[in-house]
Image 1 (cartoon, rainbow, N blue to C red):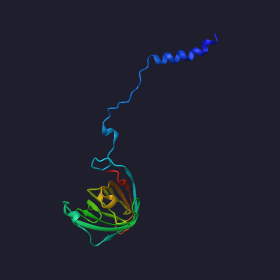
Image 2: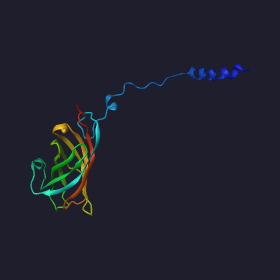
Image 3: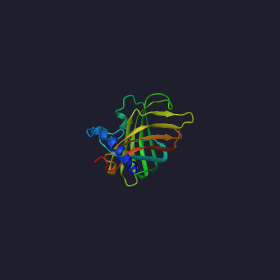
Image 4: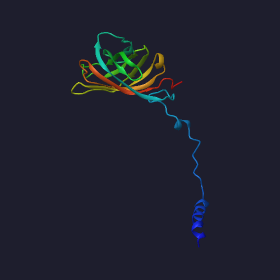
Length: 189
């Protein structure tokens, strides 16, 4: 009788293993399922990291309006400059162009936004998007984006990614924040 309690566990294990059908992973999964491409990227696989820029912007009376030359329906061009601090860049300056359709100043549609963010070391990050979502609230705070990062110079030569802009005053100037994602340096090589 003493041998039966010792043999019972072995009996249950052998019964459980008698109908053993192992679960095997499907190793034929496509590469598309194993790798993800960057949001807004060209299909290249890159590692995306958070991007944030905080600063102050103001209107400028001149700038590079060539961005708007190819945008049909542009009736008004707005130039902006800014300075601030950005992740992966340190202190930054920048210049941008907004291509607007016809209409009253606060009701014009934003047809395109483009420009540059310049890092303290001189590396440049370019951005450009046609028809980015744009809204102005009753308190004149505003949102633009997502807007795409489209390369640059130095460590941003092949950069991809996007940002969403939140500003406090669409009429005058003032504080703003960009939040989004950017490809990490060297991840697309």
